[in-house]
View 1 (cartoon, rainbow, N blue to C red):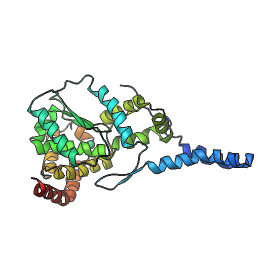
View 2: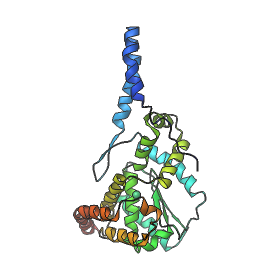
View 3: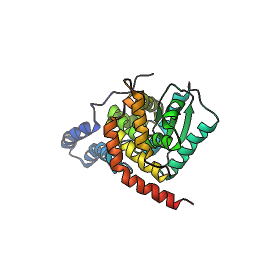
Length: 284
Ligand SMILES: [Zn+2]
């Protein structure tokens, strides 16, 4: 795997723009000079304003240079790379179930134009699932026995969809690349480089606990709105915990401790149950 892009984190553009303005203005003493000096600063202010986002469901404020359309473009490239050597399940009841859960949850998800797609990967030894920025997802057959049924699978996929709609992947990329590098890659349309970074982050580095808890909460509300009983969520995580034993599977090891997770799910449960009952009442 190519090394991730990590240069430039210490070089925020704001410092250069702010520092150069007073000197150049003093030197020239002319209005066009002032205007020229102000342009980068103005650009940065606009970028910064448009980079402030609010997560759906939780209302958390975040800083992310990438638009939903950027997420879609780089996620598409990254998905091709990830699936290049995967053994894909192309038909059958399991594949149908995975696609049904995807379409039921994404039908009610906050969606500014993501490109939803899920692939079931034939790998019974891998208890895992992941999503890339923009809506591309993979579920490994190894996690299906832990899901037990469709509601259990909705817990996993709701969580992954939560990462997508809150744009966690590119929020992390904004942080790890640094504002100026991320901005210049976006400006030049270098989605290949961005995709490499996205793959590396999605598959190898754990999300922080804040992102995990947020994905849990969004997933819980979404699965309920899609008509799946949200009480399946704490039960699923208990099974994952029991399965882990001394050596937790990769997905679990990067997620919050079982106690924290259960507590937070229980806090959000009344709201989820209300959404579930409403969805059931509205169903034809
Ligand atoms: Zn996660």
